[in-house]
Length: 247
Image (cartoon, rainbow, N blue to C red):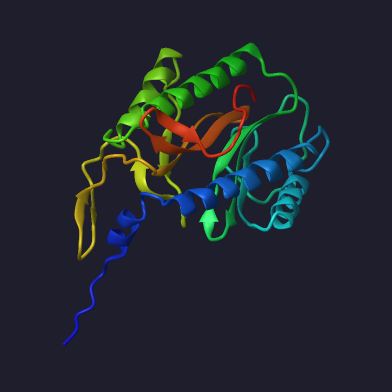
């Protein structure tokens, strides 16, 4: 006389707040992803293949005891790709997004790879992304609704005159995109047979959240910034050391 019900969303809600052990695994995953990405991108050069960078990232992640989750890039502002033989040319500025899995826990990060100094216009766009990430980090405090974080990011982008972007965030843990989802309040709800909650969830201490923002220009370039944080009373604390002050 047992009835089995769907509690998948309840489980995802329960695991939003991380234990000290989980934060430790997430910190190590983030560090591995960062180390592997920088080792890979050190090989980037005009005339080189993007596919070679992906393969180097795979090797670097494996040597550190983790598994590949993703390594994606944007070429000429034309969306994202994970498999391509594109050969870099002078002046390219590319969106790079990467992550790995360590002890079942995911990392997710990103940056901008520039093959020559950015023009004043694109440097200004990147400056806007950096400022917007910092604003989102400051808004990441216990009790704030998830939607307040992208709202703070959008406010900064608008100050820079940028309206074509998608600054947002998401939880990070056993899945690379988990609850809470940091977007504008849609009025939608998180439901299963055990729980029914507004999707615009309140943030809690020790949630691990990822923030990202990007600007694409079709046929030209793309710039990107992305980093993961632990929610605390003073805002987000970076999971690992990541210099995002410049592309």
